[in-house]
Length: 142
Image (cartoon, rainbow, N blue to C red; front, side, top):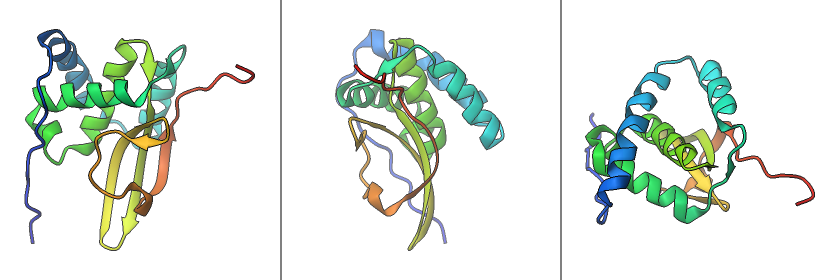
């Protein structure tokens, strides 16, 4: 049994944002090939020094990534989520990067969150048990 594939649609994404999204998508394709723990270590290193992303910033990055990549607009959730955090990082911010699973029906998924909300996701993300995250750093005391 195959799952139907539908591509996400986005609104207008400015040319400057689409141009910035392309290298993020290319780098995400390379990162997606790493073993999970190594991928997490690389993301932790890349995240250093970034401010937490707002939901608007994470959603705008997701829209740009989906606009430039058919794979990211379809079922390529790992590549899409990696590209989104990389594009946000290029702007100096970092959303929470998450992976998780659900059991009924079984699905594995990767996504980004900001301000406690999954950016652009249509699924009920509360059904997923998080298995790995690279959260935005929140400074203590400020």
